[in-house]
Length: 105
Image (cartoon, rainbow, N blue to C red; front, side, top):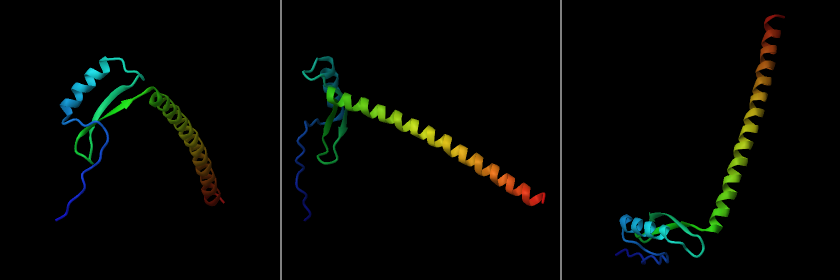
């Protein structure tokens, strides 16, 4: 008989999505000590109970950094696209000149 050990999930457990939503609504109406905001609930694959995902002040700073990094990535992608277009334009011009030279020798 195949037996798996019970999960030792240490997070707060909720029985279903409805119970989570009630808790989230109540929690977000109150002021927490560390400015934590509960975002959503999710079903845990380990213990099959529902847990919470929250956003604290520390997480908000990380979120701001992540947002800034996404902006930098977008900027880099634009630069790469511009450079790629310049290279393609040069290559097509060079190809056109080569074809012209061959055809009109």
